[in-house]
Image (cartoon, rainbow, N blue to C red; front, side):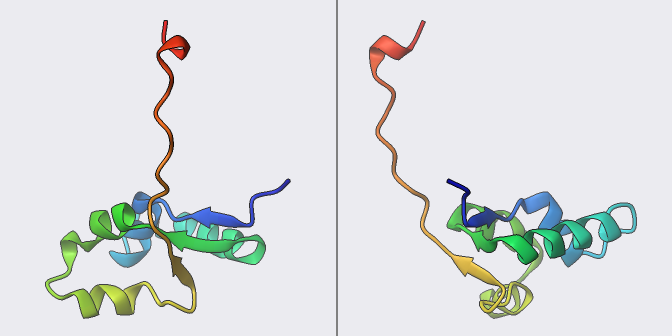
Length: 86
């Protein structure tokens, strides 16, 4: 089953948010391609990682529009069993 969502990667988001000249074009295209096929999702970790350049949360929210980026919690997963470790 194909995953219906694509989690944003902080470095790709930062390239676009900061308009970094080296990777802006590639990163913007990568986001557009992902948006064409998937629901774009950010979680609190990604949100925090890209927040560093903003002094107010409202500015950060505006740069990651909710109509483009869904917010989801970090899923809690069961820890690995001891038998799965070497």
